[in-house]
Each structure stands twice: as C-alpha cells, then as structure tokens.
Length: 55
Image (cartoon, rainbow, N blue to C red; front, top):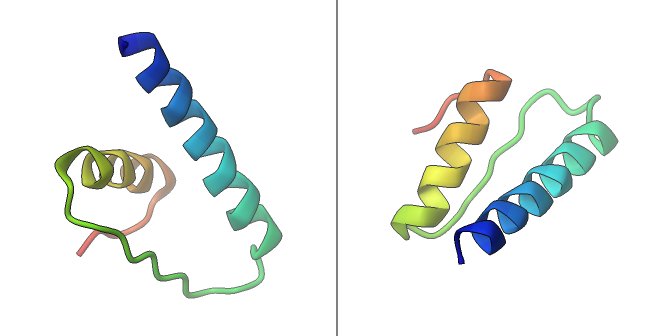
C-alpha cells in the first residue's frame, strides 16, 4: 500500500512538473484543490520544494 502511494505521488509530481514547464511563461499560477489532508499534504510539500506559497 505504501509503495502505491509513493508511485502515485511520483506520477502527480511528474504531472505538476509537466504543466509548470508547459506554462513557464505564465507568471501567476493558482491551484485549487480539496481540503483532504493527504491531497493538501502533497501540494504543500510540492510547493515548499519549488518555491510556491500555500495560502
């Protein structure tokens, strides 16, 4: 189970990287997501690693 979560997180990070690269010339990006703890945790970790601000 833990391994599948890690794989899913890796896929999600790859997708985020792809989108951010595709729209690298857009200076303001807004991500809206649900408040589920696991979902929010992923995006908060991702934003910390890539210099985004979480509100």
